[in-house]
Image (tube, rainbow, N blue to C red; front, side):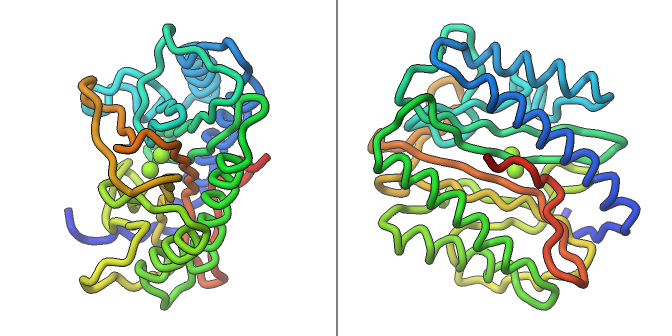
Length: 254
Ligand code: MG
Ligand code: MG
C-alpha cells in the first residue's frame, strides 16, 4: 500500500469517536498511575473500558503483541509489554500508548506521565516532548508537507538539548492502524508528501534525554535507549481539514 487514503467528513467523524474512546481510556489510566500499581493492572483497566464502549483494543494481537496498551517506563521508548511483575515506583515516568478499533476505524494516541515527584531534567523532557507535538500539529495545514511536521518536532527538541528517535515514526491512520505516509520526527532528504484535506495522521514524537540510539530487548518488542537515559512519547491522531488541524484524540492533556 503506497497511496495516501483520504477520508470523507463522515469517516473523520467516526475516527473522532474512535479517538475519543482512546482519549478517555488514557484519562482513566492517568488517574490510576500511582506508586505500586502494575503495568498489567493499567492494561486491564483500559481494556475493560474500551470493550464497554463497544470498541476493540487495537494493539492486542497486533503481530502477536499481548497487551491492550503499550506501557513503557523510563529508558523504555515505546512498545513496553504490560506485566504484573512491573510495578510503578515514585520517580518513574511512564508512557502509555493506546489504540482502538471502532466501527471499522482506528484511533491512536499516547501520553507520558510522571509517577509522583520526578527530577527536573525529566520533567523538562516530558514538557518538551508534549510541546514538540503541539508545534507539529500547528504545521498540519493543507498545502504544507509532511516534512514541515518533521522539522517542527526536530528543531524544537534539539533546541532544548534532547534528541529524536529515528527508527520509529508516526503514520497515516484510518481503516488500518498504520497507513502511508510515514511521519518521521526528523527531516529526511527525500521528497515529502503534500498535506491534503481528508488525510488523518498519527503524529508521535519519541524524544530521548540522551542520544537518539535505541535497541529492542530480547522480548522482541520493548524499545529502549542505548544509553539507558529516559525517553518520552506523546501522540495525537490529527485530521487535515480546509480550516487547519482537527485533533481527533483531544482531551489527553493534563
Ligand atoms: Mg500509538
Ligand atoms: Mg501510532
